[in-house]
Image (cartoon, rainbow, N blue to C red; front, top):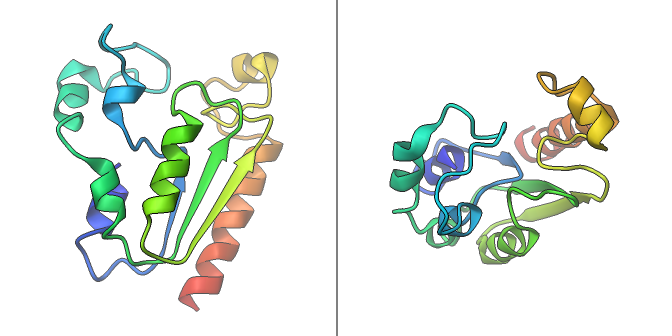
Length: 141
């Protein structure tokens, strides 16, 4: 979230890659309140309540740097529809890549998620890293 808030306002940002970006805190965290998931563990309720004050989709309209968005097709934390709307609103060169089998943390399945709970190292994550590197080379060099 902070990366694209910053990119919308800072001319020094020249390219960006976002992985499963939250574009609607209100939709990510429903009326039942803060969901203590492994993804957001440690952020705390105050962070979530403050984050809900920002209209993140409005910021998307002001991003002018080449932006690649990567999303897991089985992400249950960040809703695909929210990311698609965010991508649509971007006012820049953009690329949207979905990894059909990946969840929010880019684990391919529950067994992998358990094994790699503290690590981001699997086939899909390696692909994300290569995509990001190529995106930056293409847009910065």
